[in-house]
Structures are given as C-alpha cells and as structure tokens.
Amino acid sequence: MLNTLLISNVWFYVLGVPALLLTSLSKGGFGLGLGVVTVPLMALYLPVPEVVAILLPVLCLTDLIALWQYRGQWNWPLLRLAIPASFIGIGAGTLAIHHLGEVWLRLAVGLISVDFARRRIFRTRRVATTEAVPRLRPASCMFWGATSGFTSFMANAGEPALTMYLLPFRLSNRSFAGTTAAFFAVVNLTKLMSFSMLGLFTRTTLLTSLLLTPVAVLGTYAGIRLNRRLNATLFHQLSCAILLVIGVRLIYTSLKVIV
Image 1 (cartoon, helix red, strand yellow):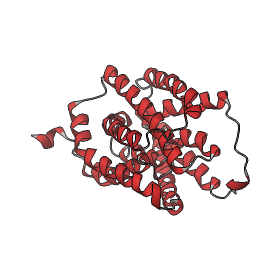
Image 2: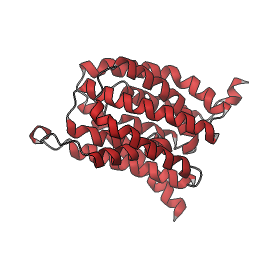
Image 3: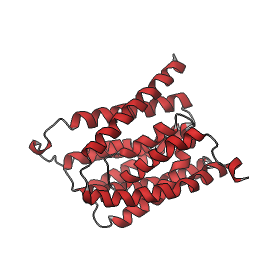
Image 4: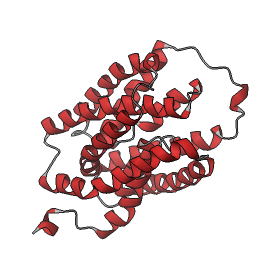
C-alpha cells in the first residue's frame, strides 16, 4: 500500500538522493549554492512543482538544524533588507506558478543552473583578495533578496542569487553559513504557508518527503562538520560542472518542445 503512495520512478531516487545529499551538505554550510543541483536533477523525471513540493518540508527541517548550529553567527545588516525583499519574490512566485507551463519552468531552471555554474567558474579565476569589500547598498539588497525569494519559490533555486549577493562581502565560513541559514529558514517557512494555501502538497509528495528526510538530516550534519575542516574548491568545481551539464540538458529539451 505504501509503495503505491510514493513516487514510483526509480530514476527519481537514483539521481534525487545524491542531489538531495548535495543540497543538505550546502544547508550545513559546505558549498556555495550547491542546493540548486537538486531540482534540475529531479526535474528530469518529475514536474517542477511536484519536485519543489517534495523538497520543501525536508528543507524546512534542514534549515532549522542549520539555524541552531550557526545561531548568532548570521550577519544581520545583510539580512535586514534582503529578508523583507524575499517576500516580494515569494508573492510574485505565488501569482506566477499556476500561469507558467511546465516547459517554461524547466527552461527557467536550466537557465538558472547554467548561469550559476558560469558565474562560479569564472569567479574562481579572479584574485578575490585584491577586491575591496563593497559598501552595503539597499538597492542591491532588495534586488537579490527578491530574486532569491522568487527563484526559491518557483524551483528551490534561491541559493545562487543569495550567494552572488553575499560573496563580495567575504564573510567567514561560519558567518556565511549562518547568514544563509537564517535567510532560508524564513523564506522556506513562508513558502510552506503559500504552498499549503495553493494546494501543492499531496499525500504522495508528503510521504516521499518523509522517506527522503534521513538523507537530508545526515547531509546537513556532514556539511556542518565539513564547514570547519575542508577546502571545498574541488568540490565546488565538480558540482558546477555537473550543474552545467544538467542545465544544458534541461534547456535543450525545453527548447525542443517550444520550437
């Protein structure tokens, strides 16, 4: 009986479980925006809204774990405008999600994936130590906060926008992880209410979320430990390469349908 209520596509789990592990590692503070990998991989076999609905309860739990582990280490000046701005993005996503066709959502996820991978690859070639830390600009806070809220709502892909916003400020590993945890704890809890009102949760998505929860919890604690111990450069490069390939595939398959 339980098997009939869970997602039955084997490839969803074959690709989705490692992708969720990457996401939870990122939630734990190991990796810059690696959470964007999960939806593109899972979306190869399921509709994007269903994938997002499966992941959201799991991510809310991992957010709370990360928030507790990095309590008091977030950068409030950077969050003060970004969090309210995210509500604008979430509101726009609430209005848009039922009006965008599945093919357009897949295309958007593909474009986000490729753009994030491109930015990360080219950024590693710069000499960051020679760059001055920028001043905090309210317009930038609002833009990236709203963009992160919107892309998070539509495809659980809010990390790239927030990462692009935070990276220039050169936060310590733990401050970066704490700031990210605080932002997405608020964003995902807000999304949880919006998704409930929109009726996007089903018995199947919730049971599948429950099945995947142990993987996410394990990955989050692993990310917390790795945040303190490892140089993540090679890990980031490999993840960006994977993300680039997935993004190109999603764009190609979407354009085939559109054209």
